Image 1: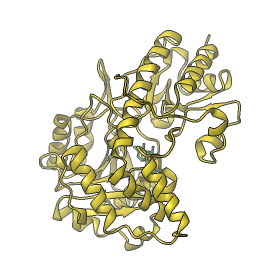
Image 2 (image 1 turned 30 degrees about the vertical axis):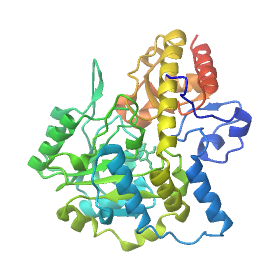
Image 3 (image 1 turned 90 degrees about the horizontal axis):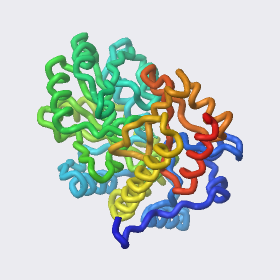
Image 4 (image 1 turned 180 degrees about the vertical axis):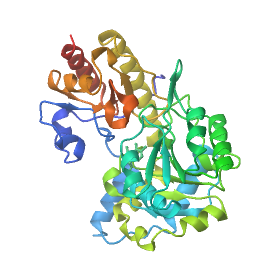
Length: 385
Ligand SMILES: Cc1ncc(COP(=O)(O)O)c(C=O)c1O
């Protein structure tokens, strides 16, 4: 930390509770919500300005993503990740969930197998059935350094020739930023068994200091078999505005993705496109402040857990504002989450929602103020004392 470092401010609880989004309306007022992946920081000024200007000109019609969206994303990808994206190969979709489901509909036939790696973001389980495909699990492996892709499990699953593997990179909830070597191994396996990769990279802009995000489409051999889905919605907190991008980097994948119903783009939110363009084009310095703030919150949480809840173990995430906490010392299944909620009045995501390896785990959202983290961990400690 330098003396110039500035943490992003967070409103007090009374003001936060005025928000009408899901995070603030799911639980009663005496519960501290550290659940769904919304952050408590204010909007980035360029995003706020773009939305305010749109309201002032009553600009609330249908979205017109081209050409700004592809250009803004390609410039951001080049600056942040040295990734050369063709703006023409960027298509708008309403959100990452819609993007993945619509992709599964064109990349797999009903009944085909789709592989995922739990513990993973809960809708991954539902997206496969929404697209009438069959879910196959190749769980992550927990070793002494953390949760990693398990290539034995993946090879076993790929050997049965599933249609698609849905990659989560960075991986929610464990916070792993898969290395370029791991992604190269994955690409090799997918090529060998003819598996298409849909890479959910929504958390990519949130790779924290010390981690290097590798876009799957830059991995040698991956472009011919991969389509990626990204969004500004996690890093700039725009989930309610409805805009994400699908990106391809080969003619083979572009022609498959072109089978998406043309109407999908009309369902994208106009405010989502305006805010996303502002975020990617002008939100870089705010994002840097966010990443420094999240790094500080991650360090703070490490200390608070160590002092107040020494029974909890975890690997601090390399990306995102989500902490995946092993609370098996307090019970199996969702018992730890229930105790924290009922006795501590702190809401966390229950581990089993992320699949069976989540038994005894909770996911804590630390995209908030130091004061709220202090209060939440104090309440959690009292709940299990
Ligand atoms: C890995 C992952 N994918 C997708 C989403 C949801 O994205 P969207 O709201 O754009 O559907 C989330 C939300 O937290 C997520 O963590």
